[in-house]
Image 1 (cartoon, rainbow, N blue to C red):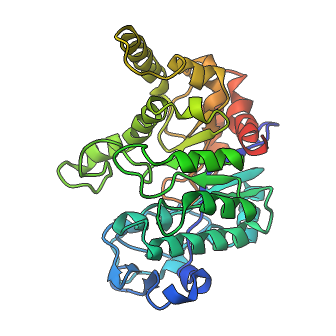
Image 2 (spheres, rainbow, N blue to C red):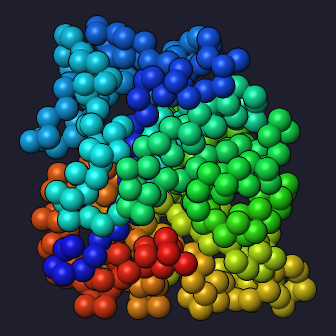
Image 3 (cartoon, one colour):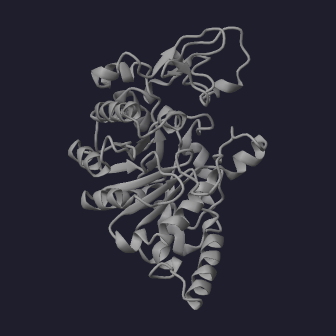
Amino acid sequence: MWNGHPVVDSDGHVVEPGTLWTEYIDPEFRENCLRVERDPADGDRLIIEGRPSRLIRRLGGVPYDPGRPIVDWNTLRRGEYASYRESSPPASYDGPARLAWLDANGIEATVLFPSLGLIWPRELDPASPYAVAHLRAYNRWITDFAAAAPDRLVPVGQLALSPHAPVAAEVAALAGAGFRHVMLPHGVAGGLDGLDPFWAAVQEHGMVVHLHKVAVPHLLPMPLPTSISAPGAGAFFNHVNEILPGQLFLAGLLDARVPDRYPRVRFAFHECNIGWLPAWLERAQESFETLRETGRPTPDHPPRHYLCDRDDFFFSTGLGERLDALPEELHPRVLLATDFPHPGTPFRPAEEWEPVLAGLPAGLRPALLGGNARRLLDK
């Protein structure tokens, strides 16, 4: 607890161990599965289908030190790099160690996302049998990770839109394995056409759909992704705009009338921020009224209905975003996120959040710390 309030970390991560895929993947894919290759001269490499990853620059570099903030491996300038394993916090790959980290930081529970799994599916066909097998392997591993305390370690499953693995059956398999949370499937491109079987399946099984930055499709008719490494613009441009896919996808959900047609599906957006939402709602309302006047298709209700009158949308936020001016009607929508163990993670979360919480309206504090997340987890 922080200041007497239960805390839920709504965006935590694991760091997949290098042995995950050889231990958990189906035997027919084991020989050529993802693996980590040792490179002490420049940092270990993730090998995908026999070649080094194009998007994951370096794995490891400096031994993890629990007494210091987490280091960004890509910024290191060293002559010899520590291995991926010794550079990763034990709490990132070991369930009991993660529980100890939660206890030490006064956190009741955490929602767990992959790290490498947010990125590697973008380097190949995510609908291929090869990719599907790796997503299933991750789901098996994270199930074992969370078995240490399933009520406190909350795994988010992964799947893909694939003819080799019908999405309704994949969702049913996840539900049968105990998952109540799933990421948006890999392989969504160009629009939301074809996702109805997914929405229907998650509604049937009462699962929450999570959209995490880096893995959210931008839904724009352009070939380049909005990511910091995308060519054609500088790092600043790309970094500023990394949150845009979340904003665009929210509009896409309402445009496709997903909340109207599947009213029991709930959504959580991560690392897309929430401070933009008031201005977005104003623009969305203007668009709703303009299109209604011209007789064009719109959602069934004004945009504010979905974000304020219903308990279906949530947005996690970290220390870098100011929340003191967030309208009261959006207080039920915000979730606290640590992003542990990624670089930039608060070193001592309770201490670093304390001055931020002190400046917030009294009613927002318990909602942000865990009240909103508990509704998402327990409903």
